[in-house]
Length: 273
Ligand code: HH2
Image (cartoon, rainbow, N blue to C red; front, side, top):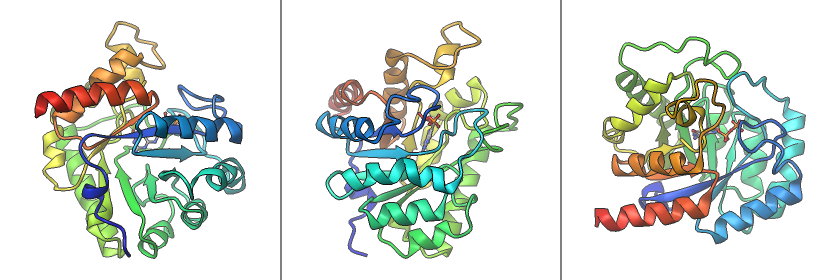
C-alpha cells in the first residue's frame, strides 16, 4: 500500500492516452489491434507527454456486445507484458480476472466503466492491491445505452451515482485517496447531457476526488457541428472539449491524440496561472 495519493500522482491537467486493442472501437478500432502496434502507440503517447496509457480489450461504443474473458485476455496480455513494467499503464476493463492479470504485470490503475457493478469480484481485486481506481457513470449498458437516455437533472443524478459508487468502493476496502471519478461522456447520454456535464463539472469535482473526462473524438462533437449521423468528432473539437473540462475542474483528460492535447492543456494551464 505504498502508492502516493492519486491527486499527487496526477497533477492537473494530466493526459491519459487511449490504446484500444480492439477491431471495433468507435474511432481507433483496428489501429492498435496487433500487440506490436498497440505497444508502439503506447510508447509514443508517453513520449508525447501522457501521464498514463489506458489499455482496453473491449469496445464499449454504443451498440457493442461484450467480449468473452479469454478473448479480452488474449488481446491485452501481450501488450501488458510488453509495457506494464516499463510504462505507466491503466487497464480499461470491467472483469476481475483481466484486472488481476494486469496488476500482476505492473498496471497501476483499473479503469472500470461499470464502476464496480459489472463483476462482483473486481472491488476485492482492487482493494487487495495498491492500484488506483477510476469509477465511471453509465446509464444502461453499451448495447442499448443510446436508445433513450433519460434524466431529470443529468448532473445531479451523475453526481449522486458517483458519490454512491465511491462509498461502495471505500466500503469494499479501496482507499479513497486512490479513487478518481468520471461522468462517462457518451455512456447513456444525449448530446445536451454530455455538454451540460462539462458545463457543470464543478459539481462533480465538489465530491473532492480527481475527475477524469473522456470526450475525445466522441460523436456529440460531430453532431454539434451539424452532422446528426456523426459517429466521431474531430481533433479540434476534442481539444476544445478537453480544455473546457480542465477549466471546470477536470484533472485527467482521456484522449486519443496525446501531443495535441498536451500542448493545448499546457497553454490552458499557463492561462490559469
Ligand atoms: N470512454 C470509452 C472507454 N472507456 N473510460 C473512462 N474512464 N472514461 C471514458 O469516457 C471512456 C472510458 C469509450 O471510448 P474509446 O475507448 O475510445 O472507444 P471504445 O469503447 O469503442 O473502445
